[in-house]
Length: 215
Image (cartoon, rainbow, N blue to C red):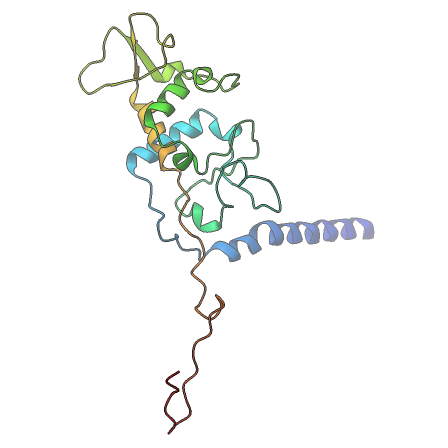
């Protein structure tokens, strides 16, 4: 009986330490995080596109968390600065990801701002990135004889679309691309250093009753 009590007590203590380290302390650290200046809430279309991103499992192959130089060469890869908690204020749930079968997408809207490129890449990745193992998403497009008014026909490389046909993006695909283009975390995350901290010294005032030197 005594051993059972010790085992139960040890289990509870271990559980309490784990909860404190993994839940309570992180919550205390980020609960008052404010959105950085320059970060905008997602539009309704971007939120719909985010749902498409989640539904199609993009998070399983792409992270949204560029690391600092001390952890990984993400900056040298062109993936942008290291992310900070404020970058995710409007992300619920957060899509940090745990795999990088493909590149990090936190700043894909900066690296690749072309809507046409994203639409074509999602229709046929290998037409844009030779050797890519990314799947295509044909069910998010329609193949037609011609696009109807208001529809978005893709500008594809020669030989990519079926002969004599046009490829039209479905509304879900257009929303997904709007979401991808919204992934821009290029604003500064630290306040400018004070004047003195930057290396410049503020001239001291002359003693009372003595004029300042004219030289």
